[in-house]
Image (cartoon, rainbow, N blue to C red; front, side, top):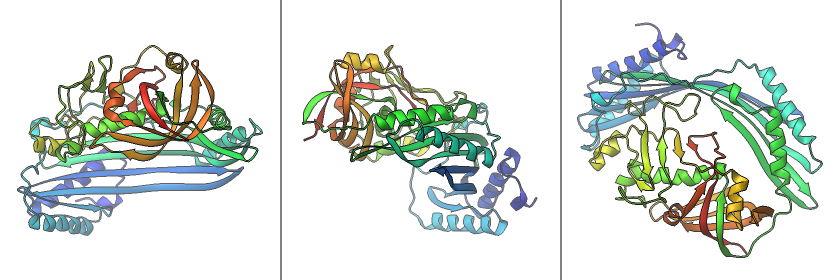
Length: 448
């Protein structure tokens, strides 16, 4: 057997050989079946602050997760050392755990017919041939540009550039091994503005799997300045009930709660307010929510899930009706259902949008709150109760009047989703959930 400690793991044949070797060792030690998940990553991050390089960090590591099965008993182990003796030791540890755990009738690999043997090639790998000196020059220029734009910008928490690639390989004893490389690149700038004794902080960032799709450093700097200075003069509000717009980047989190509520793990634990809601109305009839896992250059794309099952387009909400949950193998078996190829989560979730941009959506709202930042984690997925701190802007006559802060938004997710008025077309593509700004009919604003 070749010396696997000297192999280049950013290479599909070498990575898959490592997976095959670990699986072989598991079978030799008595496992009836096994699965291995390997992720190797490398990259660097550069941060500049106040005209000087603050940090340069390189990273390169391996994370290996091994699961062995002895019938319906299961044991797991993690390792990063790929020496043969380390692999044998980790496999032995996992086998020992499996031998002494209780049986779980739902422990099993995916059926062979579900595995992604013919998975498509998804275009999500675009390395950036950028040197560290070039990255340093970019972040220094970005920060300097931001600090020179407005006298109210008095300080910086830094401009940062990061670039990296991850090679992910999954295999099991059903004969499946698949590998998917992905890249991620990001530029950000965080600023502090001052007016009198008041200080405010805000930021801008751009992230993409292809560096050619990143916003320019000029755009990042100018947007960071604009976002920061417009927060000066923030006021508090009296408690009231008003319409609310979640700006696109915060609307993503609003839909993230929906994703959590339809995941199989939440359902079999009975910790979701959408338990037993299949076929029921959750959103108004103009809303559709679906996932598209094969889109080129999208950060959420993937050809197979964490179980090795082929991903697929799924429709979760159709005309407001909940049509499907998001399940992996274990949760599907536990619930007596079929996997949806969502072991590990969803892949590029989209919500249907209208024809209005954000200014037009504010015109439609007339008077209310525009949410641009949320704080805290006061969301109870069991009951749907929602309470989070926020800052943003007070809107009247469809126009921003002044910034607001130290306010709490309160409601129930069931009501918030059911009273979704419209989604704007200003879609934020910087994550796994693709949505524009969302207008809700009414929420409680707890202020003074």
